[in-house]
Image (tube, rainbow, N blue to C red; front, top):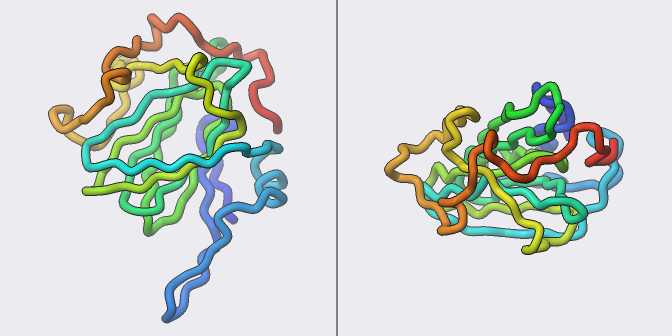
Length: 191
């Protein structure tokens, strides 16, 4: 696998080695050994999958400690714009984000460490989205940020009038008004 480091330390894009022939393709979607060698030491404990239609925007989500999660995300069908926002108060990149297009054709994966809010927008008619988490889902620990926070300046690559949100995602606060954030000085993920 090829690891592309982004402008925010710890947030990486992963490109698998693809083997194609006239039958189709094959790639190793995850290797614990290679992930630990090239990205970080983590133990994924839960895999999730969602199906969404064009305009759906999920996010920006995170879980508070002790249920904070790192995520390794990818698209099986369609295309999304995937976004990680640094919400580690005191970090040199606090409030900055990385956005990457994940598609069924580019097979890229995106690793989002603990201490980041995560979301994605659906760019095609239908998307099947999969992700690994290194901590279990804990509804009592859920938090979120407003997808349209002007201070974040995220271009979700879909017209605002086409955005489809869950009821919960319509009511998240902006980063400057957030009640709960991560502390940059805490070790939120293992390197």
